[in-house]
Amino acid sequence: MPLAQLDPDPAIEWSEQAVAGLVWLRDRFAAAIGADRLDPANPEYAERWRAAQPSNDESYRSMFGQPAFVSRQLNAAREELAQHAANGGTRAD
Image 1 (cartoon, helix red, strand yellow):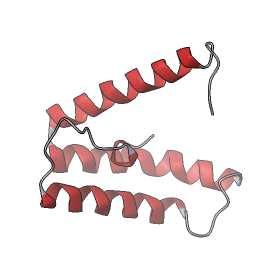
Image 2 (cartoon, one colour; image 1 turned 120 degrees about the horizontal axis):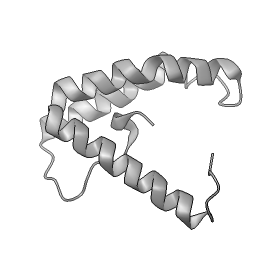
Image 3 (cartoon, helix red, strand yellow; image 1 turned 45 degrees about the horizontal axis):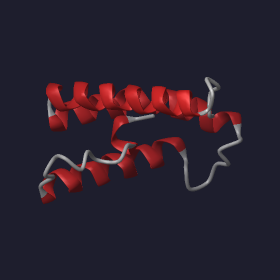
Image 4 (cartoon, one colour; image 1 turned 180 degrees about the vertical axis):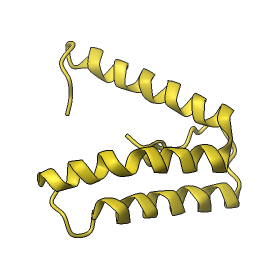
C-alpha cells in the first residue's frame, strides 16, 4: 500500500499544508493507476499500482521527511501483521 494512501497517524497534528500534500499524493496515485477508469480486477490495474507505488512513496518521503517515511512504513507493517494474525495467519487480499 502506498504510504500516502494510509490513514494519517491520529497522534500527529497535521498542518493544513501537510493534509493538502497528502491529498495531492493520493490524487496523483489514483490518476497514475487509472482508478477512475480501470476495474481493480483488471491485471493492468495491479501492474500500474506496482509501477506507481515507488514514485509515490518517494514523493511522500520528500514531502514529509525520512523519519515520517520510516515511521509510516513501520506502522503499515505492524497493521499488516496484526491483520494477518486476526485472520488466523491467512493473507487478507
